Length: 414
Image (cartoon, rainbow, N blue to C red; front, side, top):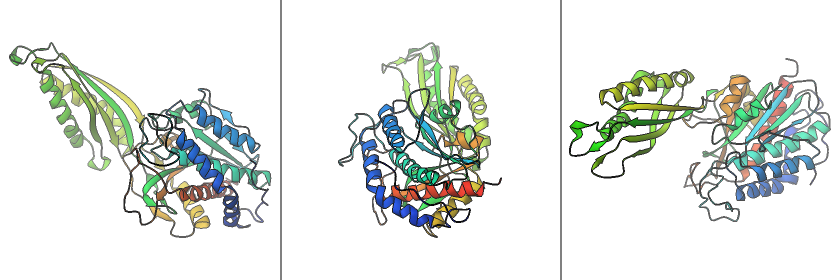
């Protein structure tokens, strides 16, 4: 397939002088069915972190058909591609392409055909939106309507918080002046986007604690170290102590997801483990957390005579939206969707590795409404039944394309 016919550049500088909303509507009339088909194909063939070979191939194939030259990441999945040759700024649009390691429990024709993998977070939609916006912007570039460049980033491995750093190590953020992304949100109606200046997601780190002792018989706990009891104290006291050692407004939260110890009912084990996540709404609390957790762990473990080892794995800091970038998103939404389509959204404790990009360059993440208006049942992301109202794809394409143009024209003379 080829992109739509070339579009005339705006009569004046910023987008809109030549009816950007109308041009996008024309583009979607021609490409909407193709984009929905592309999303369903990706949804039916989900691939988990750093295994997104088919997905990468499909994206690259479509970009190449449009006359573009994508650059594959060195690890073999994910890519980026630049549009335009103007001397102005470079604006990046980012999509994440990986799926979750879970079963798909929907009864739809595009249900996952890969056992143990499911697009339950909307990354198939993000990928399709950025692809669609890129195809439209490629037409603008061909017509000489881009004063700078747009970089499309198709990032692997967001779910394991490593893909953004992989892109950055490969130079995918080099020369980028501003970056934008969307994330599906089933709490917002389709046709609306949630915006928030400042922090919009939380940090997310993974911790594992291993406690050890000599073990022994449950009839004689006084002759050994009661490891299970000590582990239970660590499990309950660590989250409570953390909540009293940081500003409560940071919402520093430790939640356990896996606990193991022992194999016999009448034996005190010599080893036990606990794993969980530490999340925060505040970047300062995120930086303080490892040292604070280590000090508290040593204190509790020492009181019960067990040795405790902490494995603290950094995940992602909070995603902090830059105010100017949020204003650009707001202006673009007003232009192509109308006033009222941009709605306030709260900060979430969910993690998102887009945070690494906006620690390096200005940018913003918006929430793309995927709920059918009037829907009674609300299925959250990361659930095997998650799906979207596919009209969200068209709205996302409009907003991402318009935001890129708004940022390019707004930053042309910086």
